[in-house]
Image (cartoon, rainbow, N blue to C red; front, side, top):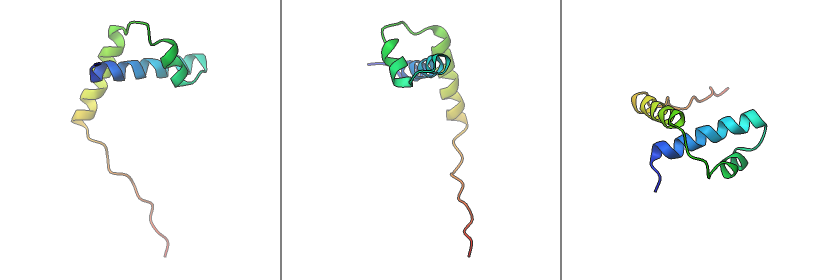
Length: 67
């Protein structure tokens, strides 16, 4: 079983690759699934997880209703 930081790291790497190559993220993830995940992506995933642990998301904004 993969750790949370590895899953997030792979998703971040796939998003970057997809953006750079103009391909879909699902395709990028499948195409590069066999490649080892670098320490950069693991470190970035840990930083993202730490940030969101310390900064909970804001409640969704509701638009005012016109009466």
